Length: 386
Image (tube, rainbow, N blue to C red; front, top):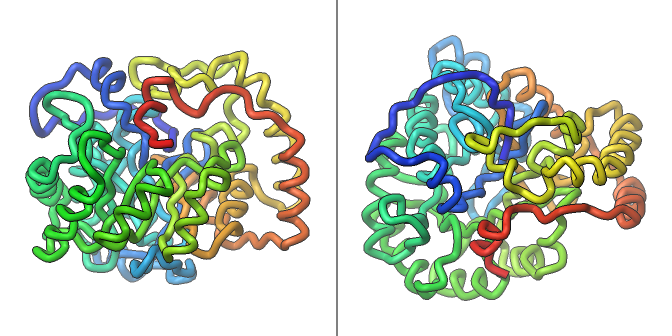
């Protein structure tokens, strides 16, 4: 997830009113792959432009990668932090501008979810991308019950909420539809079957899973091919390397989409023990890793990262993104930002090449470091399938 969220702005809730604080506490959304703080976002291929002049400026230099059979830009754009969860929402005009700028810069892969806002981020993304809808890929997510709270991946619920997402996104199909969190009360085979039905109807084109275990990925893939798996992955959180998720993706030809590719902003080097996070609007305020004590204790990670990034004439954020893309050719990070300058900064990472020797040196250096603090709160980690 990304944060650059200092601007004020208002989005009208599309459905029923929510108690925002309770909503953030009870839904444990976290997903979407945004990285936050000063440097954020990054590109994917490109949609047409918002206007004639916009389309004429589209940059085609970003290479593409495959998420299963789905082709996207080598870096995607996580849109969540424009609207929610890393500070108050940005001004709507600002949000639309940065999304369209990402397209102009070559981004074609945009990530959102019904729970971001809730609802407001899908609405924003739909409006921003409408002028060039056929030239981009939209990923969104289902799996929370936004009326009763908690998880809900029952087939009848999925088939209900997909129509609402399509309306908000101003489109007739969702390119990549993720289950946001695995629902232990619904067999994954039933979920995959529901998505298979939606694909046959043309409402969904590809199936994705978020924060799922290797076993669940395998079971789902047997019913309906999984195009992509989304999980937090960065130099600070390398769980997918050790829990079998990356291995099963490689075995089955599934793409991998890291959210939080810059350690939810920490790897930008702009967050320290003095950083104040507003618990009312910023989810990280409740994360162990973002306590003042752990922010200070993790400083050696930033010190090492700066040494490596300076050698490549890159910022720490750029280096963190380049490292991810160097791991596998089917990994597509989705950092996010609301700031056009930070967008440009992040997109520079696609031009940074790391050699096998450099990657080994990085692994050796980071193996000597300890990451202090869990990646999310206890309640939110309970939603992550182990």
